[in-house]
Amino acid sequence: MNSIEQFNRAGRALMEKLLLRFPPIAFKVIYDEAEAPEGSLRPLRDTGRHPALCQAFAMVRRNRAALTMFKEDNWCIWPNACFRLCPLDEDDVNYLGPMLFMKDGQKSLKFFKEKFPWLRTDKTPLGFTMAPLDTCNFIPDVVLVYCRVSQVRTLIMAAKYQDGDVFDVLPDTVASCCIATIPLLNGKTYNIAIPDPGEYERSLAGEDELIFSVRGDGLSNLMEGLEALEKIRFGYADLKYDMNLDYPRAKFYNDMSEKWGLDVGETWVH
Image (cartoon, rainbow, N blue to C red; front, side, top):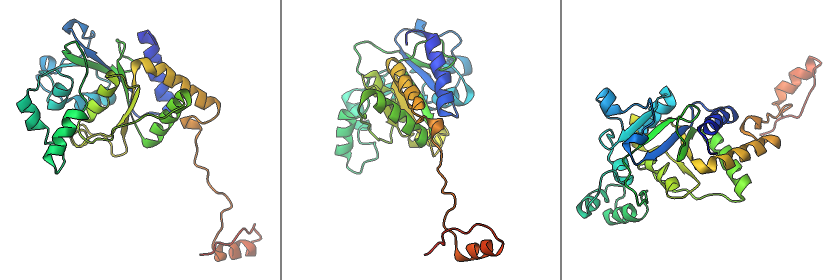
């Protein structure tokens, strides 16, 4: 995909094919203030308030808002740190590293340094912009889909169908906004993130929701996979519960059916 219109169409198609409750989110890192799309809300400038990035995601998918955020907009430290909007010195790393909900502070610090999602870039990011995929007016770096496990299943099937393999995920429960985006900005094609406690409490993520993300330049491949699944009747809307009719019944059911002259089936036995 190389045009905004193609991404908009893909956004509509994803909603239809997966029966999504919310629109997918188009997300892009910006390196110059002039890259902020026209009509995009700047939270602090325009409202005097600060959302966290996960709250901004909720505003996009629930309210169909378009937002652009810089470091001064963001009320959460993790995106500012992980996207390298704000620098961390060695003291900062040693202070934050042990705070990842691990009983061993040294293991937490090691995880923070080696496995936490840090944006790899030679440029200096200023912020990020986001909007519903079906109406965005920019080409996204990453597309995020908040969806049920059954919908994630179909997305994994589509990726596997196309690529002949499954992808690795890091099932962490801290900084879900960064886990859903930064590994893809660093080169990964797909990822799955679990909404973290902050996203659950303050951004109203559902208990049945996961975040499936795909690089913008990988979306066309994923869409081809979804279309291929539909052709073989394995698309999301094609899968139905297969109820077992004429199921075994307790003896008194069959006794009464026989008395009434109705069909009698197998008797259910403990």
